[in-house]
Image (cartoon, rainbow, N blue to C red; front, side):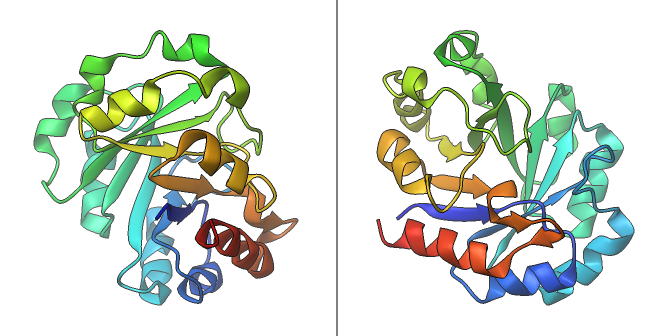
Length: 209
């Protein structure tokens, strides 16, 4: 069964939306330039409302040692890394903090540059559109025939599909890629933030496959 991550949670009220449906992961953005940014000072209020069985994921861009330390201390279970990073920092992270690598792609040619040796440091690899958080999909047609997900699974690495997912296209994405996890943000939002009805519809589509 494909697991579900709802990313870009910003308020305790949005956390409660996730509690009402079988959602597996909640993502909170720690990148200050994002419109979905949440400062560390407000994370505890969100976590207090979130069901304990929902896995808490920190989304960071080019994290430094301080970011990794604060994410672990705040109670995150997963650190999702976009941008650059220093692999030596991973030696200092707590064992319970899992690492996801986000890869931004336009088409299959971007995956030809993928560093498979690098991937071994991560528990999951997330494929996202070139501009993450944009609500746009990447080149599904060009990527679907690659053996990317098979190589990940051969190494015991989970595959996360993100980038422009909605209730209307998530079934197609799952049929094409067979991901372990689907990750949605803008696809379950309205003009003010997360939309409970859109979350319900998205979860329903995934669970009915």
